[in-house]
Length: 277
Image 1 (cartoon, helix red, strand yellow):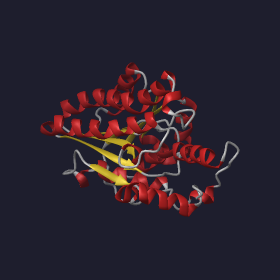
Image 2: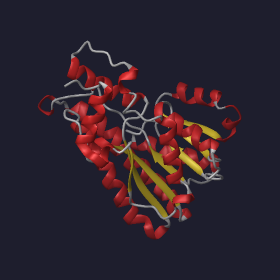
Image 3: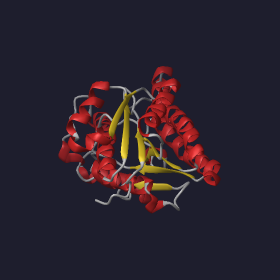
Image 4: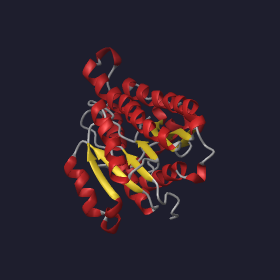
């Protein structure tokens, strides 16, 4: 693994579990100083215990991206600790509970919980990060979206689909707005990842197709799930100076699902046994 993030300061939201946890370790191994954020303080502190020598460059700030004040505190915590902010990864996201809801039965609470975390949180974390990056005249924002917000929305996940589609346009807007100030923004379109949110989505789909008591076995989804370490490698590379010319881009990290859109998704899901026909 290269040290292509040497000396960079990165803020990673949703760092306490799943993909965010993997991102944190990956960035640290590449030489970055990392501020992780999340709502569950005990998990954030537990990460430090597991990092060994890497923990010296790790700092945790408890916070909730649905709170604008908390978004500001997260960015301030990173700058106060390490003196600058070079990279923001808007990774925090939720699928919503329940995972699948017919739109005519959706509640305001269900909609707000998803949009406030996935889209509002990304916007306001970016707002405060951008203020610091404008002063530095440099910085990178990576917004973590999904195939659901690109070419492959899934029925009964309207709020999640909309939130991830919103991240695509948010990234393009940021890229255009701040290109003349040395700041890049791009969006990563993720397929299935072996983290908590991805597992929750696949289990929700399995129950919907097979019945409320159905259980998804891990081996059933092995062909459509990417290792989180590989995803972290891609995000770290995009955030590094190796990709200094890339901004405003949609980068698919999805095993080719969006290349074939719904047809490819259908083939993968049926071949793996997650969907039965």
